Image 1 (tube, rainbow, N blue to C red):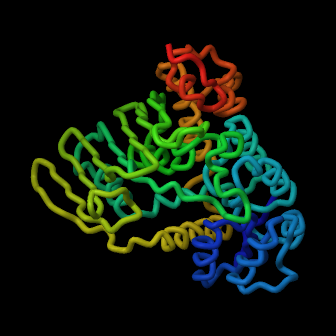
Image 2 (cartoon, one colour; image 1 turned 180 degrees about the vertical axis):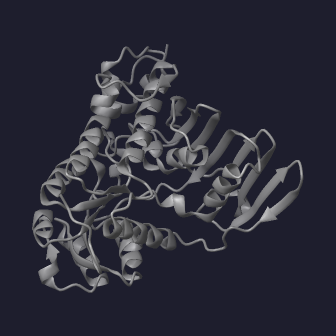
Length: 388
């Protein structure tokens, strides 16, 4: 069992991809009570770039992450592709090291559940990089729901139809997110952020999902680039619209006594653009609020690491525990199942469900009709089958 940490929190970094270089390292360097103990990545070029940015000597740079664990970090940032995380989590649990992991938790719910259980049994903090929870517009929207400004929340719409299809690190495999065996899915798995944001706004667990999933503009890919997703809560619903390409962005919250509208510059997909307007309308007033002007993601990562460091130091829960990441992961693979079968899928998934056991690749074990759009598109190893 790990003891609470006092003073400086030492962080190890496992995985030196673009998100580590662009966001995590700058965020950690900005914190006064956190230090970067070392970095680990088998790719020498990527590791050297992060090592230089973090101002670390060669003695703090490791090709094998297990050597980094032996150096004694208080927690590690785990930023490797999700299919590699299970073994690393097992080793972290054995070493008594807390973990803050990038999303998604895993690509297979069975492995995600096992990871959560391992860390719980070791009495270690296990948190998610759910950085969207720190965008002020979502925080303010949640506050307005909580204080009754729009009555009982009934419906949330999250439009992310203008997502860039950003490649991975050139030194690894830039297109790994388009390989279902490595990524677990396409834009929905990559933008799992919007699933946990919907749950954050409703402040309730997702009970069921239904979805339309397609590949419209990436011929030859076995993953989706377009998603229309419905989430079912105890007291309402959320609609999530996603696409890699050009399209509308923003958010809408509808309640029994009012509504909130969030729009970004040029009606684009936030929160990567300046906020254009945040409007509240209820029975008493119509007003416009300004929750943020900054378009940088770096502050979010800084706040996230500061909170997780405090969770380790003060023995407090992380803002986004891995259990929340497991719920979001199950919602995503349930959406793939819903699209394949044309049915509403209840959550949580049964432990013997093929998509619980194998993620999106488990769809091949289901009785998917030939008319299914996923089969006709040849997504997730389902075809292609006949168009009839």
